[in-house]
Amino acid sequence: MTRLDDLFKELDHDINIKDDRGKVIALHLYIEEWVNEILKQFAGTPEIKARLSFWKKVKMVYAVGLIDDLLLHNISCINKLRNLYSHQRKPSKDKIEEIIAEMKERPCYEWGWEATKLEGICVLTMMELDDIYESLKKSRKPV
Image (cartoon, rainbow, N blue to C red):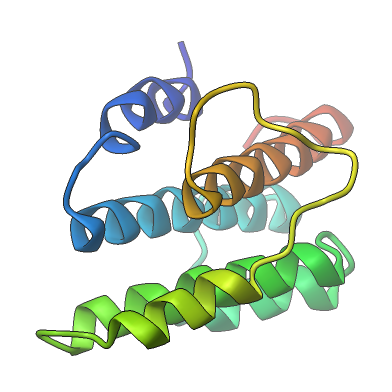
């Protein structure tokens, strides 16, 4: 079982966290794991030496064409939510709902389980990132 397989297994637990703050931060961490794995595969090295922020890593993956505008947009929304919960003791419910409303669903995707828009888009975002990772892994030697 790979590290990413383990992440999917752990996700089942974390997606059910009742606390919104904990759920958003946990989901953001999963997305960051995939972004890191994609960068490692793309760079062909097990270590990314540069100390880059999450957003700079996402922009790098976008700049080289590995993620599209919609995926970038949804990752941006998830990052905004994470920042809101991480930096404000009592974030505005209106602001949270505004950011979630900005998230966009792909027309071809539907999740087959009971989930909120936030949960569904986060999981689909991770699935897309995993597809990108797997595609890179197949096209390159393992790192």
